[in-house]
Image 1 (tube, rainbow, N blue to C red):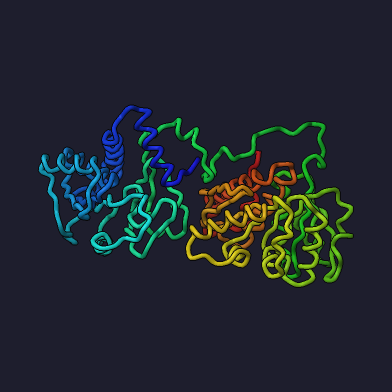
Image 2: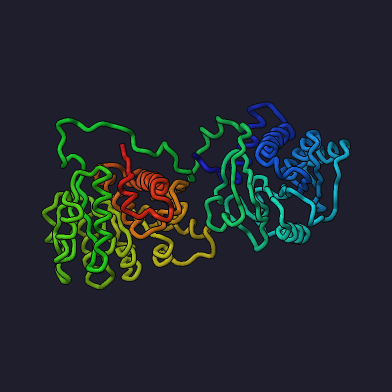
Length: 486
């Protein structure tokens, strides 16, 4: 799914008005009608005494349409017109319509009696903090113990930027128009959205299909196309992963990554592991091959005989000067894209190796590793901008792992993952992801597709695991067992 910017959404409205030969008022009426249908059906328990906070623009207009339809349905509703600035023409039309229908307008809050308060103040386009009467009212409403609903976005959150300022409407439900807003996937926004639902108002399909977007939500279209294997093929036809991972106290990371790689379809996995620990891999995963390394050994001679493997480097590796020296040599020796995770990322940040990474490599930092690599940001929007800048600058793909994992490719295109489960917040989950992505890369899939599809399959497996084991009980090994890559 393309996720358009606030400006692109405005253009989408205009295109729809022109294409369907309707007025802005008619589009607003249609939006308000669809919003009302959802509210009446899903929130009927909260419709005994409704207050709608109405701003000056068309978001307020949506609220006025809802008020009018509630009145016609004998739902007790009051309207609070907030702000003294001039109102949009559509807004004015519905103020008059509501007044003619004897809908009650109020100028103060009754903090005890409302069963539902609807925020129709600003929607997704406000890029400045709430001030004055708007701030006072939102702060007051947030203290009222009743059900709250926001139209499009809670006031105080911008569709692209996320929360702006320190005053945000706290919603139990957000009804967003046509599609999720980009800032839905920011951690800061989640505090205010409540349960978010999309209300389809039938905007132009032509605009959606033809308007390019550099921001997309990952869906089933990013799954790898199904194909059967050639009956005369052999393991060498499906890629060879070289896993450089593990240290005496962190062997499990290499075991998980290796098993995930094989389970994701690559033909061969060779693990370069600490001396004396190869038997752990043989016992855990007899299908994998092992090369052992000593603490002061040069890695290149050990792996030079391997024919163009795809490298996964970092899980459980340990951070020290010898490993840093060897990683730098690997970067010079191996010019193909690789998957770089965990301690390899920590080494890159500590020993300043970011400029030496082979082009199109896939970095998979969690937030702490991301900050070490690229610096701290004031909010997620800034962090997202940093991710784009750094991916383009260094010609790498950055997979920022968090609840809504964000992938940015070398051109700055951004992909958001909305699948997965809180149960995936468990030790080793990231090592499994590295194995999946590296396996797809080894099978000849492009770096971008490997990163995006790898994140998707990993998340879907996590969802299945959480159902079978529960979010509290599942562990990283369970994710591997649920991987299903056609």
